[in-house]
Image (cartoon, rainbow, N blue to C red; front, side, top):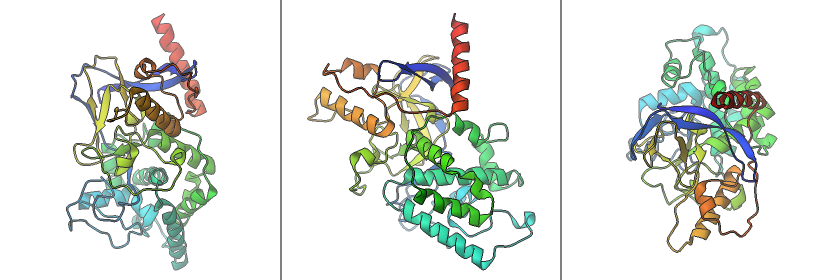
Length: 388
């Protein structure tokens, strides 16, 4: 993909350093070049668009009116732009979360679900639907689909020729580097999660196949939610939309995703394994584009890049708007970053535009799982010794 992950120490916004993995390019690029393309591991439409028939529930493509494919047994009321998207969605997560088919193929099981079990499964799905249909619950849907996809990958190992297995290979997911190996390395935020969100999802897996609920402990769900909140990208076509419903959620509690247009302009969100390593800058070296008309992320160089240069993107709208002073624009984007990602931006542009008012300092609150922290410390020490 023309990039590598590098462990480095970055300013934490309060005068200290925080050790992070960042992306650097492996070769030279000209401004406007496509550095790489990446399909999302999982994606989700905004709740107000789900089931409307305007966008595909799997690839997020805009659908011509009257051309949407609507499955009969999907409790989310999902729609698809093609049969291929429907098959992939069903195999990866949709059936587990919102269908009633048994997750294990008939050839590999001896029992069938009773009517009572199916009723319990539908009841759990109904409770979860009440959550994800509320505004600002994209992260909850991404987490659910991520866990379901991990399960589907394990099941697919028993069926090498299945659609799930073929999709997993195409996405670079195999037995050597399973999904969890990638996710474990990503940074996350500690966010409060109520049992009201965890219990319904756990029940969905338990009623689908007893034992699957072990994939979703309270601690694991909280960490995954924090990773979606920190790493998900907002998907927007042609500058984004302007008809997202107004919500009464407090600004500091609004769900945010990485997008240079602002989360309010997205149609949905995607979680990308490689792009999650990209750091923020208010003067980014690259930008995410969805010019293919789907959730496939195209990373475009904003300026000429040399091999070894760091790849950065804008997590928020960093443009200076009409009637907005440089100081006001700086303050707006830094507030958004503090609310959404809990760090004070240390980039050169922010430093240059600093009005010198002695603004309140916020330390970077993002975290990494303990085994990865210890590993990264060892990598950083090794890199330092090679330089010496």
